[in-house]
Image (cartoon, rainbow, N blue to C red; front, side):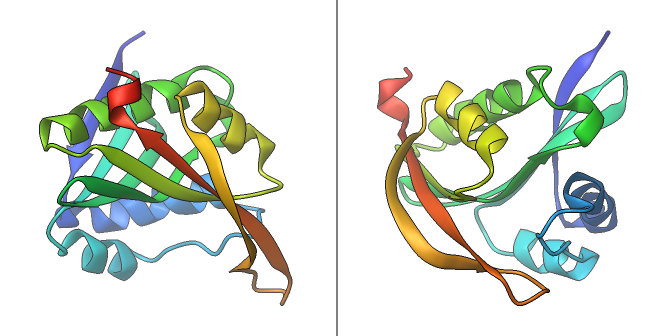
Length: 157
C-alpha cells in the first residue's frame, strides 16, 4: 500500500470539485464547483492537498494562510477511507508545510454535529476555542452551529 500526499493548484480545480462532491455527497454541505476552487486557488497563500492510497484519492484539504495564521477552508475524507488514519496524516502533512511558511496558528470551523471530524481535529491537536450559532446554512433552509477550533503549531513541535 502506497500512501502519498500531493499539493495541487488551480489546474486541478475540476478534480478537486469532483473529490469534494464525493466527500460531502448526501450531507447537508453544498458541493463546491470547479470555479469555486479555481477562484480560491488564485488567491496567494491558498493551498490544496490530497492524500491518496495506491493512487486513489482518500481525503483533501484546502487551506489559506497569511502571515503567521492559516484557515482550513474545507477538509474531508471520502467515506470508504474514513476511520483509517488518512485525516490525521493529511492534517500533519499540511501543518508541516505551513510551519515551513512560518505559520504559527491554524483555525477552522466545523459543524457541532460532525463528531467524526471533531475527533479527527482533536487527535491532531486542535482545541475548541468557541462556538458560532447558526453558522452553516443548508440548501433545505436549516442552520447548524459551528465550533471554532484552533491549533498552535508550537504545541506540536
